[in-house]
Amino acid sequence: MFGLGAPELIIILLVVVLLFGSTRLPKLARSLGEASKEFKKGINEGKDDDEPAAPAKDPDQKVTMTQAELDAMLAERERQARGEPPPPPAQG
Image (cartoon, rainbow, N blue to C red):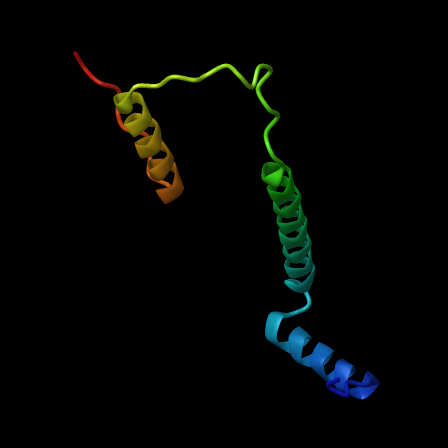
């Protein structure tokens, strides 16, 4: 594809060693490996979240909720989606 042979790879390796130094290369490789592990872990966790939830035991049972409860639940989900911190507890 790019036509990279052994001489080109050696030149690239030498440039990387000159740029980062031989002491920082192991740290760089270690951090890249940890980042790769975290990325794969996140992908696997995302797959688990995509699975549908188990159905309720009794599908004929109706769930009732007031409009205020529904609004509060939707506001909480929107807040979480935006990544905002939870509101302080009500004082009273």
